[in-house]
Amino acid sequence: MKVEIWSDIACPFCWIGKRSFDSALARFEHADETEVIWRSYQLGPNMPREMEGDIYDVLASKYGGTREQAKEMNVRVRTMAEGVGLDCNFDAIRPTNTMDAHRLIHLARKSGVQDETKELLFKAYFHDGSNVSDIGVLRRTGAEVGLDTAEVAEMLDTGDFAVAVGLEQNEAQELGISAVPTFVFDRKSAVAGAQSEDLLLDALRTAWAAEPR
Image 1 (cartoon, rainbow, N blue to C red):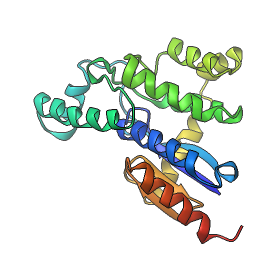
Image 2: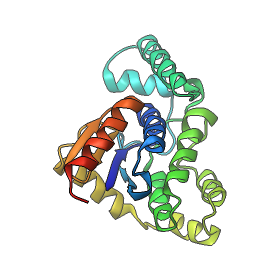
Image 3: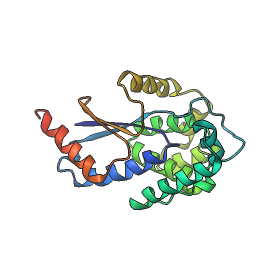
Image 4: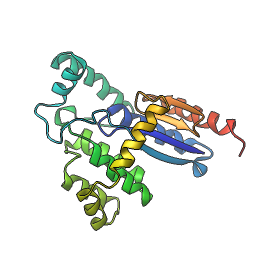
């Protein structure tokens, strides 16, 4: 079975959803026969690499509320994250464009370390306060998962995988995906949002039973 997950590094619900999915997959009877592919979805494709203001300014501008309302919203999100064992430090977040982070994830897919790369980038963004468009951060992430440092450097210096990121963004629109994370099972069924471990496990089992193997 193939599970494709559309998500963005700058989405806390995507990290929460990943943690729940990881736990569900660990309980799934056919996990060793399940291929998981992380697909690109940029929530802010036009954002600059360096921004004035913090995440609360960005959210207030995007949704038309106030900084205080943005802070209150993130308190609730942080509580959700803690419920699955994650520590989100919203005060430290450095809003940025995630294109290069997605490009690194595409490179990691070639070497079979896409999941590990995704996890480290989530941690860098939501916990460490790192700028995930910074070349140094991306090179260190690549090195930590065992990618060839020269290959990572070459990818970052060029436009490699930028087209692939855009194509996956377009594919999401064609599939009717408008929220992340979205988990797509064999292109037959889908679950959107930071759902619970049990719900995702049920989705895995239902999708598996729906197709002859």
